[in-house]
Amino acid sequence: MKSVLLCISFSLLVGNILNGAPTDYNDLSEGELETEVSEKDVRRTRKGKVESEVKNALASKYRGDKGIGNDPDVIFAENFEEGSLEAVKSRWESVKSIEIMSLSRDVPPGSAGKHSLLMTHIGGKGTGGHLYRRLLPGYEKLYVRFYVKFDPDCYPIHHFFHVGGYNPPTPWPQGGAGIRPVGSERFTTGVEPFGRKWRWDFYSYWMKMRSSPDNKSWGHDFINDQNLKAERGKWICVELMMKMNNPVTEHNGQQALWIDGKPWSKEGQLISYFGKGFPKGRWIWDSFIPDPKGKPFEGFQWRSVKELKLNFLWVLLYITKAPPGYVSKVWFDDIVVAKKYVGPMNFSSSISSNIAHSRDYRK
Ligand SMILES: [Ca+2]
Image 1 (cartoon, protein in one colour):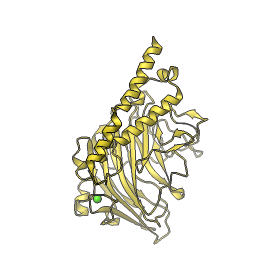
Image 2 (cartoon, rainbow, N blue to C red):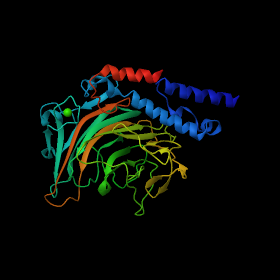
Image 3 (cartoon, rainbow, N blue to C red):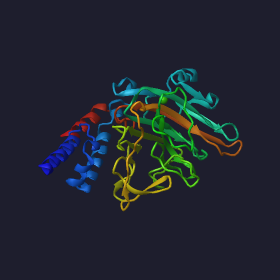
Image 4 (spheres, helix red, strand yellow):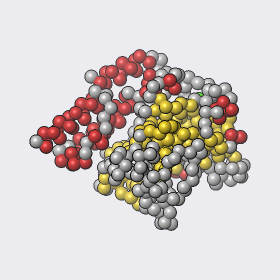
């Protein structure tokens, strides 16, 4: 009897994916997955889910992102088209070092807008700047998509764009560097172009994080693939998904990353999407090294109380070691926070053809 039910639940799962309906890998309990569904099937299902999200991207409905801010699934959008820095500032709760910011005419290809935000860091003068705001009342799952362009000469970046939650939520970013959260008060993930390696990875703090040899807990990285390059000199579309653990005693929280609308795989496994049981790999202190021969990832227990939710967005540029006078430029544009996968900007001439394509996929 049990095996029949298991087969049904798996076929429902696959059916949902093919129909383009929202499907959750975590809808299946761990026991169900282990008993009937082969590892290959699960991997295919997860891949299918990611592909389905990409095909049904929210941005595909809005050419050049025009009007995307009015979509019912969009929680917040910032395209820097307000006309002045003061107007931009009014949409954020904490702005650090506005003097290094300016509106630039350099925008992502296909963008319907005319301006982006440029942050210009000069070595020896401060550590960069930020825009920060709360996302109230707080969310269980969010997609955050933004465009960024690093100048070809940009100095290696110490820390970058962050999303997370504070309890209670504060109108400014909190500290906590090197300290493991308790679980009731905060969790954070940065999407960062790691140091001199210029490779994309997560940088996460949460209650079940580990320690480094210095006995402190610094942000953990997960992808560790030098081939996932943060290319300088071109606009890049970055998207982060974060999902809270529920119930709060569980480890079923997730996070995923897309660069230019693409998930990232290595050695046959998806390594840009982390949740309970996937991918496989091993920990070396605070770095997870994906490896098909390793152990399944334990999942994220982001929180121990339900009041802690995803509730802030922190557009951060933090550069600490540039030599005096060294100029680093970073542009940001077309930030969208949504309940669904946003995806790269649609700059095809016909929106309807794109929608037709997504319908085809649902057949
Ligand atoms: Ca813009």
